[in-house]
Structures are given as C-alpha cells and as structure tokens.
Image (cartoon, rainbow, N blue to C red; front, side):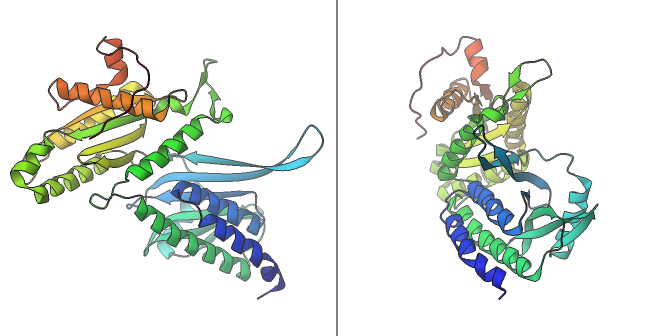
Length: 355
C-alpha cells in the first residue's frame, strides 16, 4: 500500500463509520458524495439513480465551495441539490452512463482538458445507478480501489436500510420510511435558498408542488371476511403492484397499514395532481381481480405547504378520504375543493386516526 493511501486510511475509516451510522437512505446517498469528493480532490460529485427499466429517476448533485466571510475568514460551504424530475440530462452523461451500464464497469469520457468519470452502483447483480465526477487527471490504481471499496460498502449498507424501510408483503415503503420522508420534505421546504423568483415577480416554492394522498381499498374487510386473509393478502399485493405501475417514477408510495396507503407526489398544479390520483383510481376500477373480480379505492389528498405541519397535511388528506367514503366511495376528493365548497371548515390540527 502506498504512503498516500496509508495516510488516508484513518480518515476513510472514520468517514465509513459515520456513513454506516445513518438510518435514512437518502441521507446515506448524500454521505457517499461527501465521503468520496474530498478523497478524490473534487468539489462536485453526482449520484444518478435508475429504476428497474434502467430509466434515470433521480439525481443528487453535491458541491463544495470556499466562501470568504465578512471578517475575512474562509470556510467551505456544502450544497446538495436533489432532482426528482430528470429531464434533459447532459448528453455526455447519458452516453457515458449507457456505456457503464452495458459494460458493468467504470468508464471515462474526455471533456476538453478534463475527464468525466462514472462508476456503476450495483443492487444485487444489476446496475441501479452511477457515481459521476469530473477532474483533470486519470483515476490512479489506489484511488480506483478506494472508490470501488466505498461503493461496495455503500451498496451493501443501502440494501440493508432499504429492507428495513419496506413492507414485507407488498414491498412498498412502510410507515417508518414515510416518517423519514416527512422530515426530508419539510426540511427541504424550510431551506431559504429553496425559494425561486418566478417570471411574474412572485416567489414560489417546490412545496406548492407537493401533494399527499391517503388511499383506502373500499370494503376490504368484506373481502377478508368472505374469502379469507390469503385472498386478502393477494388483493393487497395486486393493488400495490397496480398503483406502483400507474404512479410515476418520481412519486412515493407507502403502505401505512392494513388496506391504507399514502402517496406523495409532485405536480405543477392542482389539476395535474387530481389527474394523477384519478388515473390510479381508474386503473384499480378497471382491473379484474381473482375471486372478487372488481373492487375500488377511495382517495383523499391535500397540498403540502411549508407552513403546515406534516400531521395536519395528513389529517386534511384523511378527512377528505373519509368524506369520499361517506359520499359513496370509489372517488377522489381534494381538501381544497371540499374547503372551497363549504363541506369543510378550516380547523386546527387534529390527530389522525388510520385504524
């Protein structure tokens, strides 16, 4: 082992120790970028995530920069940018990651006087993402071994964390994962630099574009009572698969418990959000299920806002779901519509009862 590698070993072990103390998959991804960037002497690193069809679904960019304070003291500032909508990726990144996927090993591409480098992330035997960075020199053998080792530790630990956040029956995210998503989304909404100037001069936030829905299988207790829990479990699994295939790649879907699910989506406006949830309702209604043949779902949803606590957003969606069931089931209700029509009155935050 070279002297440089030996000198870096204690710091690397410390970083790996911190990485494996994290209990949130997305924070773990950020920790990976924070770990490898300084080791490689680069300020910018990126993590690209793909779905089972190898479509790019999420990108995390990590950037470190030096800022001079008013008192003349220099300090390093970190910035993490997460993109859930992956459009118009740089063509050099697309072609490079395509080569990595096909070969299953790291690849490089010249960009002027610098090199763009991409390493594969593995989930089992399949490529599930890419670690990408750019710098002015080739990756040395010792650096290559370090990157591969860190990525292997990351992938193995990520898989363990992912399993702990999954529902055993459906494979969807579970309640624990939902609570983590709440913390992450509200933390994101609370960032002052996350507000952008619009073309009309007003200020907007991505929080205006998030929507949370509570989804319930109608008359599910009757299915369990009549056909038994084995058929009930099969129905839960089929409904989960149908919703997974109908929601978009960027949408988050959780099994909260029993026959209840929670979805968090991003949409530019209320009309698009309504269309997303209505499409899911129609997909369930149109499907033919074993033995029970036809069943439906009811949906209640509410807008996610930075000044509204998660429990209140959940409560609003749950009240809307209850109203949908009261009005006959098999329908999608929005909290803001019920409020505007006078069905609901604005009220203080209340505890949510799901069971």
